Image (cartoon, rainbow, N blue to C red):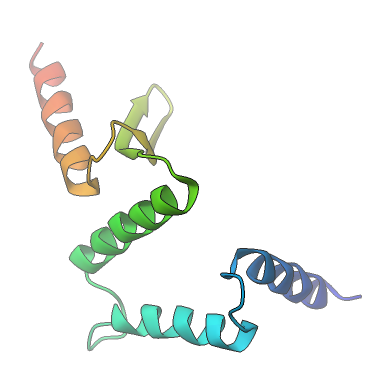
Length: 110
């Protein structure tokens, strides 16, 4: 089996596991593509605002799916910066980014 076939097989397996019960694979892929094209702008790339909206929607969907309530946080340490959804409940991605910007500005002054 080629690497391409392995990737396609793994992707199909993940999609099959992730799709809602009773939904066909074709319908699930069609919905995913519709959601993607909904975010496309006239240049073929989503705007920054659409990307942030997508992240918030993804976080809400995952919280709903797994009955959790995680919000966004920006984590900065000596060798990396990460954006993750393990933060305070209900915190949207824009708030997490602005809070991080303010925190870094305050720390820079001290």
